[in-house]
Length: 335
Ligand code: AMP
Ligand code: MG
Image (cartoon, rainbow, N blue to C red):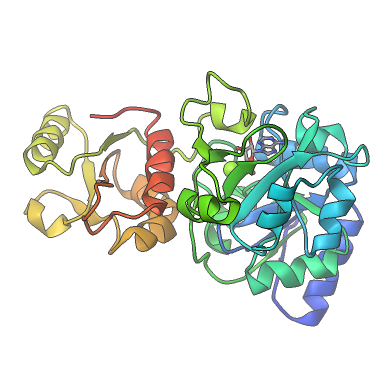
């Protein structure tokens, strides 16, 4: 299949919408990461998402909507908490609600709930408006790889596998949306992101649990899988301990590796290869996946360090989301 590279003009946006309605796959930018979209009501199209990504079929997709009325097309019940959150959309927030029967089971991996997001990026909204149907979309990467935050990263993974890529801007947020389960019982954060627990608690007027051990509660099946991983081995330090990082690096060199440090202050490390994690927490999130994709082409071992202590440059609640992604990228290997 020859992948079309589409621009943000009215002809190409029309074509992107037509392709979706014909059951094809179109990758598109959002403020978080690039998505791989298909008509949420078209079972065959949804199944081709799992094939193109190599995604396990028990990992459900997020349904992307353009406006509030499309939320009512896919959700069976909208609680008062859900209504409060919907007032703050569009946002980098996904809410999980009881699903309507019209949503095929392959979208939700057989669950009785559906994850819904209304992205705020202008480009994503233009695409969804042209699609005229809710669009189910996971991140537009091969399963397990770092999510794409530029169209060039989508091309790396998806060229020849999908009908079209809408070539928009680089993603501004850089890590995936916050997933908030409002389907039953008390609200729970299933995946941390830029829409922070603090803001959710303020909107709902009550505490919100963050599910940190998904193995015990299989609420969000996707979080079980290997995720966001570069092609080379990676370990994670959460203390920013200079001596420890140097010793670890030197040991890897002795073992014959060509390692790189991905750290807060690269200039500290002298002749060792060191790259900046980012200028502040938002910058870390924005650049994280692209840095991992870049480093795996230059080095054969990544030693990442991220310190989310309060009062550091890197503090802030998006740090919870960053630590979550880094731990998964490192396959849980914390040093
Ligand atoms: P991705 O599309 O790769 O960003 O992953 C989507 C995330 O949303 C995964 O972690 C899923 O487990 C989660 N998700 C999607 N649908 C549901 C649902 N119905 N209930 C709970 N989590 C969901
Ligand atoms: Mg993903």
